[in-house]
Length: 197
Image (tube, rainbow, N blue to C red; front, side, top):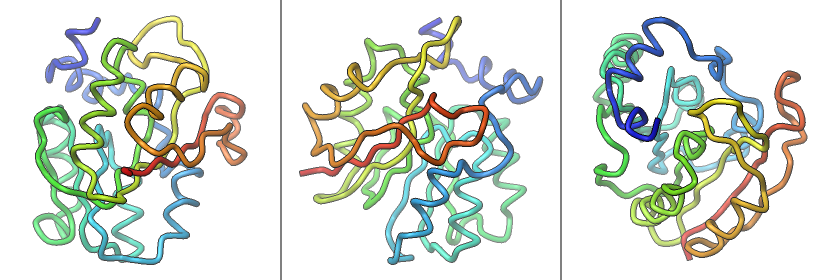
């Protein structure tokens, strides 16, 4: 299964066949409420593994000026570019490719369970890449699954598993159960904020 997470065709098929049980059709409440308290609309924001990009749409609707999304699936990124034509190439940059090969500098990375696409063996590599992409003092914030899954991806996990990986490379400000998850996900999500120190 590990090979599949880096396979464009695998992800294309998920979106073409709409076998995307994680897709709720709108921005997740914890991320929406986090976005709502951001003051600086000019910060550079990255959403890795953006999927259908609901959080990116919300950011753009709120007037954020520098939003970048990246996903491995060209089917997805092409659809999203067309859908967001009024922003594409201006406030919005859409990248098709492997997160681990991405270059850039961002004040904020928004995490919507992308971390949980990776098996535990790759999670530290993910955090190291996040640290590389963040500007000094930059922030990663978002949602992780707080549960196990019968099949993968996504891969489940718990706060006890995640915390040491984040703390090794970043200044973990917060990691706690989400109080504002949507009903089907109550008790199954963690919200976290970490900074590049």
